[in-house]
Image 1 (cartoon, rainbow over the protein chains, first blue to last red):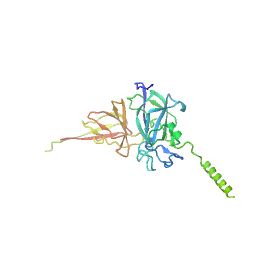
Image 2: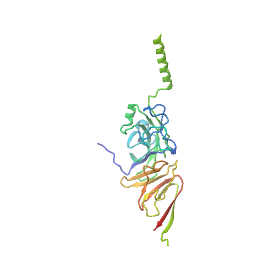
Image 3: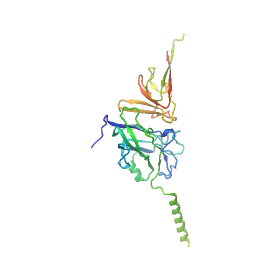
Image 4: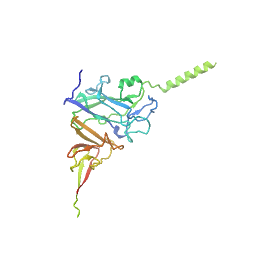
Length: 191
Length: 99
């Protein structure tokens, strides 16, 4: 089985994001689990991972998950609206200075987060299970050597916050249409 | 007669990155060594220690809750250097008393 052995030429990043001190990753309008409400900041029951490709400006379809650049959000489970980036670092994460396996220099990165209470599922499984998931915009990052203290993080490349939710979120109009249909059926049966 | 010798030493740290160490031969948490950094938003105040075994930096970030540091309060050994990454200059004042 092929493995990637660290060499001096490999590129590192600091897989952390502190949201400029006040921003964080939050739950969007449709949530699974439903007990987690829109606007709440994510905590330790969510995993977050970097998807990357060598070179700047690569397409989303070329990005690969980086096993070493995977961690969980700071804190315990996402159970209340009380958590925030400024009170307990909810919505943020601090990973390690990580060997990406790609060479030093320009790379493309996207961050993906998903509900993973036991920290044993992948992004693809989260999509299949229909639980909360979300991803950042695609960014360029410069990877440096292992001994470079100026190693880039998601903060230094300007990652903006994003929301997580379920992909098959019904539009409000779909709810209204379904409600109208149910009402129509009800009245027809009464006649 | 008071035989103790007291001395105050100040390490003026710059904003951005700086390679520093305690001016006094002490070990312990940076809080006990007098380096009481405040938390900052952008950039966050951090300390970087070189991990010899892993051959990479371990980054400690100052926060406003818990122990005040993520992942833990940095521990500095005697004579050990480390990097500070600060949003603004900071004066690290150490009082040293010899009994």
